[in-house]
Image (tube, rainbow, N blue to C red; front, side, top):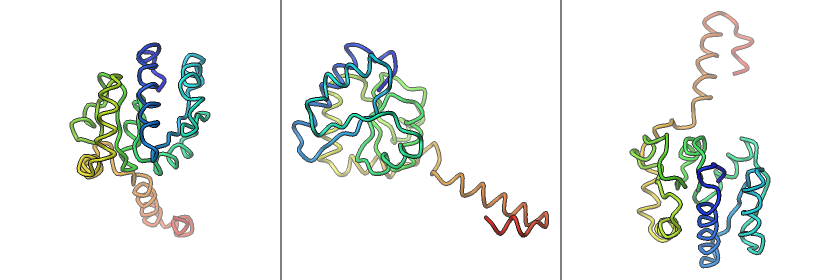
Amino acid sequence: MHRRENWGSKMAKVFAAMNQFVNEHEEVAVVFPVHPNPIVQKLAHQYFDDNDRVQLIKPLDVIDFHNLAARSWVVLTDSGGIQEEAPALKKPVLVLRESTERPEGVTAGVLRLVGTNPDVIKTMLNHLLHDEVTYQSFLTNQNPYGDGQAAQRIVKIIAQWLLKEGDTDCASNY
C-alpha cells in the first residue's frame, strides 16, 4: 500500500484493520513489502512493529515478488500492476481503493474492490478465510489479464520462426 490517495488516516485505518485481523486469527501471518516512502514506513512500523506475525520487508524485485505472491493466501494491494499480476498466480486480490483503472478484473471476479473501510476489509478477509466458495470464486473466474503463459508462447513462436528460416542450431536451444 503506497498510493498518495491512501496516505494518512485511510492508510492508518487499513493497517489497524489488518493488525486486528491477524491478532484474531492465529493461522494468519502477513509479509508486507513496505514502500520506501518515509510516510508509509512510519505508519507501517507504528502499526506492525509489535506484531510478530507481521513481517515488514524491503520492496521486492519482480521475481521475488512473484515467488512470494505465489505462496500467499490472498493479496491486498492498491497497486495497479499487482492487480494484473496476482490473478495469474491464482490468488484472490482485494483492492484497497475506492475505484480502479482495472475494472475488467472486478467484472471478471478476479479482483474485489474493498476500499479502505476497515469493516469491509475484515469482512472480506473473513469470507475468504471461512468460506471456500468465496475463495474459489476468485480462482475459477477467467483472468482478463492472461494466464501467465505468454513468455512460453513467445519462445515457441520464435523457435518455429527460426526453424522456418533454417537456423536449427539456434532453434534447438528453445
